[in-house]
Image 1 (cartoon, rainbow, N blue to C red):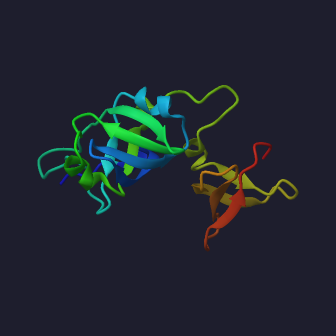
Image 2 (image 1 turned 60 degrees about the horizontal axis):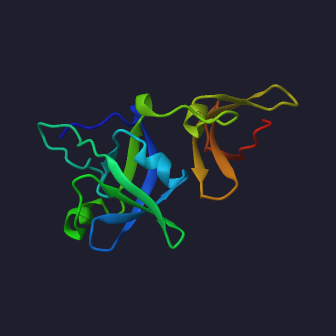
Length: 165
């Protein structure tokens, strides 16, 4: 199986359980429903780590999100060609990815957290190099925590993201 280079793909939603009989799947994502349906194509990494639609001779399948809506306050997604619960079952607990090249621009005054990965972090009081941003934790709340890997080794530190810093 060909692996997909995840450096060029951005995680945009985590899939949960199925909703109903027509292929909808609950998801956790940080965008409004209409943002998802405006995307050209996405790919899904299944819970077992392989890419949906991939085979030894083919790359992962490109999917279109044809419906995204709130159902009882939760995001529900439906993908083109996935019209039954049976067809949606393999996608449960998968992760939805968007090509970095296809990502829409960030809204004015906003940033994409993925753009912070690789940025240098320094202590503003001393100018000392703390490390580099290697990831983030977003629990769908108002706060985001950056994962900063120290410049000289050691376990990553968790730093609250604040626009001013």
